[in-house]
Image 1 (cartoon, rainbow, N blue to C red):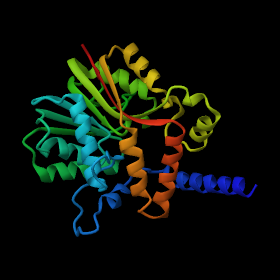
Image 2 (cartoon, helix red, strand yellow; image 1 turned 45 degrees about the vertical axis):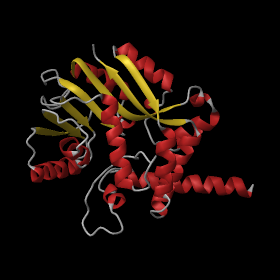
Image 3 (cartoon, helix red, strand yellow; image 1 turned 180 degrees about the vertical axis):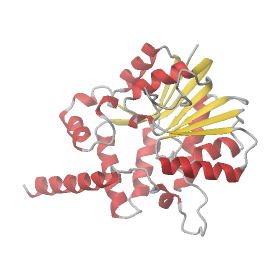
Length: 290
């Protein structure tokens, strides 16, 4: 009984902490995660879980995940790129400056938080890139009444590439985002996502149902298996579908890192660990519009 009560109390504390984050779960919390112990000036503002195969440093792991995503996307020089959920702008700067990234001819970005939009604008302005960068505040999904310049509005230009780095599992619903991205892609264009789905069959177990109901890391409608993910994209019309499971290079390293960052982050790490044990998979996904 003592073990059960302790487990219930632990989950209760996690839920209370998560509830406190819901008003603005992605404000500027990530700045502290980027701060290295020997730095006086903050140099990066990454906001993803990272790819930890060959590093234990948060900014480097985040950069490696972004690079993996670009490689999966097959980014080509001169592409018109839409970066969805770019946070406070680090992924935009990455596309504009990283030596291993082919330079786009144009970058469009959209992020839902006004704070991130404003910060991204200021950072890009200081960079003064040669490539045009147009940023939008708003939901990743175009809805009736949204601004006509939304990247997915019927009047917007099409893209060669849509990137969603560790964010699409939050979109309500993700399948609608995938549909709109497909319509916004030019012929031969691709979407690439670093995303979360589940092991086939895991969502039918009581443990996974309990974890995903109590610890709402993602909307219920986005709880799908890898097989269902493929089926959704196929039904939308994507071809050349490809998925790589990189769970072992993401969750363990990120959780270990969070355990060094104080009580609040340890709790968040505990939530991720429970999702991981419940069958959550961190994947790289690509689809093409022919």
